[in-house]
Image (tube, rainbow, N blue to C red):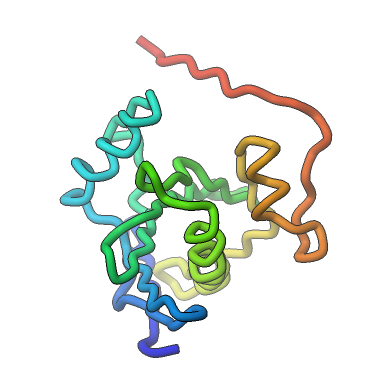
Length: 167
């Protein structure tokens, strides 16, 4: 593992100070903070999946996983203030990315998210204590990537996302 990372809490925006990279198997992978300049790329990935992306609705706390061929996965962390629950959303990959590559990228992404959540501080340097991470995903993906042995609880119920835009 090379590089380090620190988090700063400013005006409710968290900023990744430096990238983190590591060698996973034979693959060199890097994780970095999402920036608004990444939106066209992420939007193209979403459109390929018939998803709509609205830049104003994306959390500023996004992460992009890259390897030698470039960016291939993204995830956004949404924080609830005054509540110990964080949610992951818009976790998806570049179209055509193999399950094997995703499986190799998940550990660096998950470790970064956990580190991010455990290092959050207010402007007064008071720790924020998140206790639960929620992720809505398809059951097949949950079974492939999330292990109950690693602390994940995978619901037995089918669910669907419904969204209402307030006029």
